[in-house]
Figure 1 (cartoon, rainbow, N blue to C red):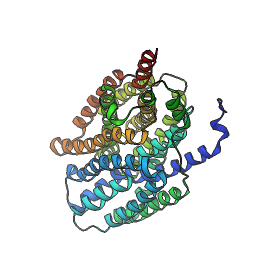
Figure 2 (figure 1 turned 180 degrees about the horizontal axis):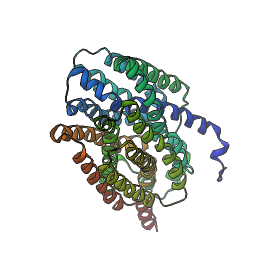
Figure 3 (figure 1 turned 60 degrees about the vertical axis):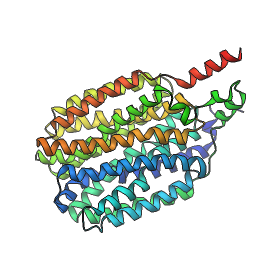
Figure 4 (figure 1 turned 90 degrees about the vertical axis):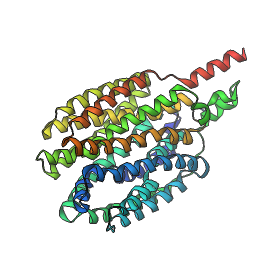
Length: 414
């Protein structure tokens, strides 16, 4: 039995979706909070801005490895086991981080362990939701992946309060175990899910079984695969450039830390309506065109940022940038399934999101380096503008590989 309303009559899918939303909220609250700690860690260990940013950049590079490993583990052991392990590692990572006495130790406790604990969180959630939903996948991903925005929004005031009232070590000693407990606890409640049933039916009924979906090796032979990886890199570059350096930049301009934290909260907060609204629209409109529109608006946002110098200007940027980033990252998630099929969605997502983690490493590192050399963030934000323009071009040249394969299989069959 099937029909337009079938998924809505299966509440277990939506219950699982809420569990994944809460898990991702905890994962991204930890992952996206480093910019709030950057100045404190810089002062604690007497580092440069670029040197402090290196901890997050190395974290992001290592996260690329754990993203691929997580995608492999997801396809073999299931979401539940993988997230249970990640929750435990996350708690241990930040408890050890707040005990460090030398800056090099942060590369082990933060960069390495936290990458293992949270690095694959986004892609694993994306893959798990994609397996659960087919007809309403855009909306479901919009709801589930909004956990990134909820986490960023929630952690900003909490971390700022703990740092200003106590210190950065106390803040991590609270946030780490709390996030780890949430990830671990809700992972225990997850139920094992199988590959999307409609994908299985398609695979069995297709004249050419391979037409139902690409393997990772097959996808990597297409130009679209690499273009999507580049889009992930570019949007991540600017997102983490903003998250890690807008607060220090605002503080340098004389804005208090508590008011500067509003910028990060707005970026994270507005990813939520971006995911929900554009996710809903993506089930009704051409996803590629929506993606191009989002990248174009991101270009406009980066142009605005290059001339921003007051809190209200940063807030305008945060609202527009956060909304379009939320929508774009949600669209990217649906485009992976649309482009290559659901057969190997876990591994496919894990490999593609490596581009995202590379961008997350390059953005903060280059931003800090440019600041150390020039004494301002202007050239860093101009670089971000150029990267945003590249995203527009890459998205424009992608093509629907799965549809092309199915059409080719149909022609061969006749």
